[in-house]
Image 1 (cartoon, rainbow, N blue to C red):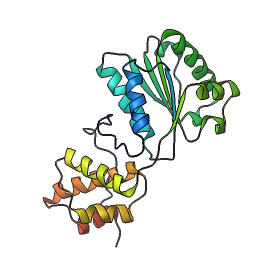
Image 2: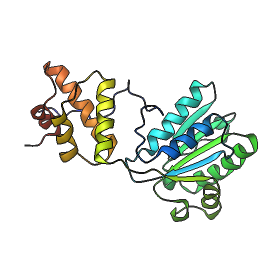
Image 3: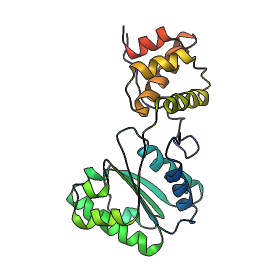
Length: 222
């Protein structure tokens, strides 16, 4: 069959409200307080395994800050020219471990500038600051602020996330479809959501309700 695209649909946007909290209630609370200025520490570093929700939280924080009228930007594994970050009140940097030497120097300078100007810096990485293969000065700075590990969701929590995502699309997801996807799909939530989006598109194309056979077609398994 024709290969289906498994990207998250454009109309779905990560927010703090649609983040499935699981064991991350304290982290979410701290992030909310940081965005409202109620949190004294203005630097937050989060880490965790792939698909644990790091990018979701950073994108959601940027979206919330922009909705509040602030200048905010998300950067993935890169740093632009300093002039492009002028006046930014919140900067979120994902996959910090992938930054090259020049970008690390730029992030170190940005850290100091935001700290002096009362801005907020959110950074995510694959491991705790002490284990990052970065410049010593940058690694130390990232460890100075608040540090949280994003705890992966249990299967029950992933099922909740899948059903919430399906409802947002107007899709009624039978329990057996959710169970099959969790049993045979990839373990990380972004991939599972991508398959769910592809299933929705497949059902719309065929004008049929979601079912395990249709899910198998999307996943291309026997």
